[in-house]
Length: 426
Ligand SMILES: [Zn+2]
Image (cartoon, rainbow, N blue to C red; front, top):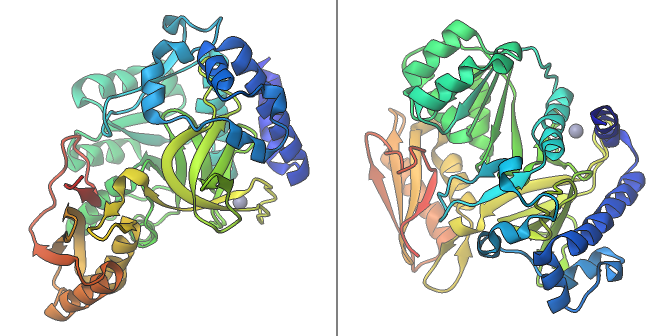
């Protein structure tokens, strides 16, 4: 059975866009029928909206199904599990870190876990030139003594030459692992590789030369990535996904955007109850075409982004997702009611001061106060500071005060991560 899945998923990226659209629509319709028949939560939801799955005949009909929010998913508990798969003990489970509130868990059958956690991830990485037997190190958010050591002792991980390091360990400890294990591939967050890059530069370490880096879980800032690629001497590929869905879209070496795994997800970009056009920003709402244990229909990721249709030099016909400009919770709300994507503020620091800043963090303190903490290097001058003030004034307008604080280091937050943008104001 798995053999059939492997062939199916490995052929799909090269099928024509029309064939893929048809395949995606068939899968979507069967998910809607399945959810209505098997999941009381969705049956109730569809009934209340006065709709039957058979009445969804085009993409615009999808608006008749209400968007599923994070809160609704949390409140649904086990009611969102499908009949036949409603014993969580028999399912694979992923739990969000809970940094945005209470943690929520997603459940998967073994087959779907294999497709989402292995097949699709391997497919995209294979297209980037990755082989399963090369040495890889994954950054995980775990207690170093326990989970990481346990992971590293597993025979399967030894066989596939995979090691884990914990975000709770020091960079020095990671370097010990890298030195012994000589990884070809590193996985982690952009902010981690930014920290690693700064450490390597500061300590003039130049022996760490992986062949590729995969990042995920954060907004990927182009300038930061360029710096990481320069210092570590290899390409950096970003992945867009979530705990609930796994890998939704991914970059290939042509870097034209993120190829959307359209054979596993129905991704909508919406604004005011309509699907936006290509290059127009919209909220990202996703339906899983794979997860049978816990169907997710029109789930709001809390992110915004854009799409364009595919056509890539590697022959892949999946459409592209572009510049996810902000997780919605990270938007800065200003006193005049405007909402600013912190992305523009980060890009402004890159434009004005990239060469003069080792590290920085942008914090919204109130509806009219933004603080930029900067760890400067020797190139930092009062002129750069003035330029930064001017640029922020252009973006934020006259009512918002920008304060630049020169600091020795940027503290990590409670989950031990560096955050490029933060808000202390709600
Ligand atoms: Zn491509």
